Image (cartoon, rainbow, N blue to C red; front, side, top):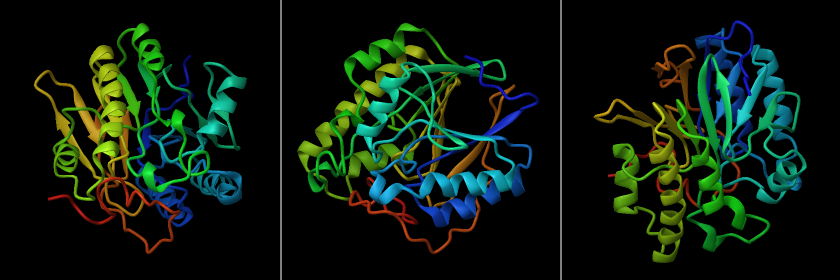
Length: 287
């Protein structure tokens, strides 16, 4: 499916927001100031689709700030800290299709292929909550948060794409993500790390099979980038309250810009995240 808006030449790509309204009212106006031509945001997950009791107002806030900024839509590749019971229900009701959940926000099922500006894209959401041992199943984490072997097979079956959007990182990724995985600064248990490794291995299979020119992911809460010897590029995005939360992608050339990397980080209240932002805290770098 071709999702290109008429006259659209570049999009913004955003990392984790965690339902953080204070960050939304900072970063969306920043996108408008830096790139007033942008009408689409591609979001790589941990957006803020949470149980209704605590996540009710977030999409409405995103709608408000996007409309003020002239941004027409936000397409979410879901993360792990999302209500996967709700997501699974939405996707079951519209198999293989984006699902609109507010005026501006759409969520994308796993292995959805689409085109923008003539290039092919795939959304492959989900990841392992490495802090699952501290969360209540069905309320704070969900078993379907990680892709299955069938999801991997479905993603691979369609052949190569130009751009792959994931929440989970891949093995052999950027230096910052590899360092965090190697050092385990939050001291997660062996069981939690095994669970994380399973999710990462499945996403890596997709990455290796569809061979995109560009991979963009979140989850690790650290901004970094890597160009491989074969020219393929990986962009790891920071999370809310971090520099490097948003990049700009040219639709014709797939060139990447970090134009928003220096945006101010507000003192913001965030949603509960016992994972302590996966393996690093906001504003800190792994050693």
